[in-house]
Image 1 (cartoon, rainbow, N blue to C red):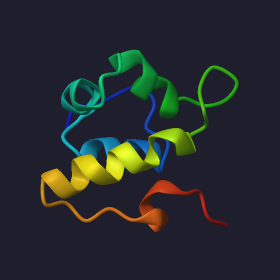
Image 2 (cartoon, rainbow, N blue to C red):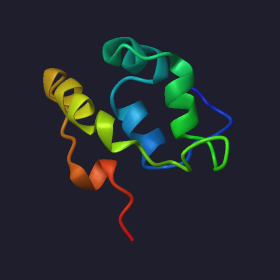
Image 3 (tube, rainbow, N blue to C red):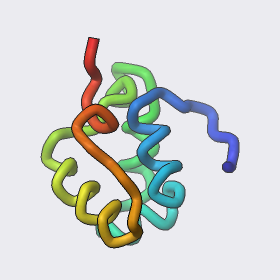
Length: 78
């Protein structure tokens, strides 16, 4: 695991679980900065929340790598 400045969850945990920012950004067709924003506190980032529009793609990436990933991994549940 490469240390990053911001590691807010669940975004950071999901990104690491799926191979890190560079690999995952490539698989999703996104720039690494998008994933970085997911791990940053608000207002610059999403506060660790992964936008729902990416959930399906993340689940597909996880399946293709044999990684278990579900709603509890993606959502901020209180």
